[in-house]
Image (cartoon, rainbow, N blue to C red; front, side, top):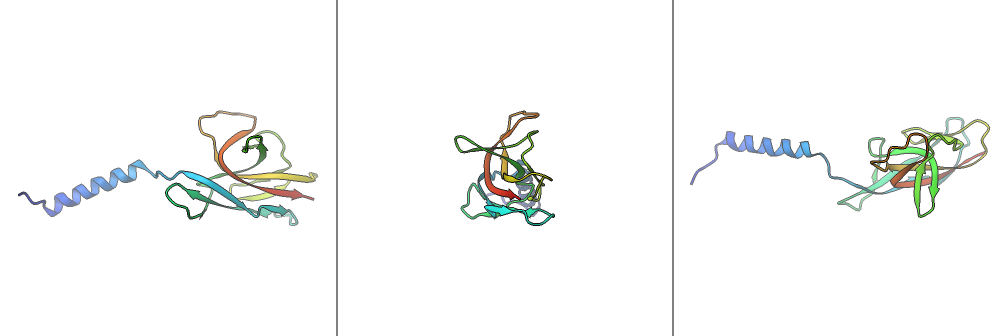
Amino acid sequence: MRHWSGFAAFALLLIVGLFTLACGSTRTLKSVTVSPAIATQSSPSGVQFSATGVFSGTSTPQPLTSKDITWCAGVLVSGGGGACAGNINPGATVDQNGVAQCLSGFSGTVTILAGKLESGMVIVDGPRPMSVFGSAQLTCP
């Protein structure tokens, strides 16, 4: 029987490790929750929203960052979908850290979304559909 030398075993382990890293993560975002679910902007600096998500292979919610999701002001559409507003003025903006601000002079409610934009769709000016998302409501006084 042939025995592996220490160097050969190390080389094999290194190659397997590099292939594993090259393949990337197989995590798929399954659900998103945005909190607070309802907020009113009472400060000029805006409202801080946060998102948690559940990925495939686990049932434990994890905090999401701008590497995981896109934040936007948008709309809920029939059938349970959501879409970022695109070039339509939704009444508020939200940055990639989840800080939403009402636009000057706007009064009303805005839907804040956090999630994954649908892949494969090229939409320049109109609403951009999300495949997995969570939503919250921002009231602008």
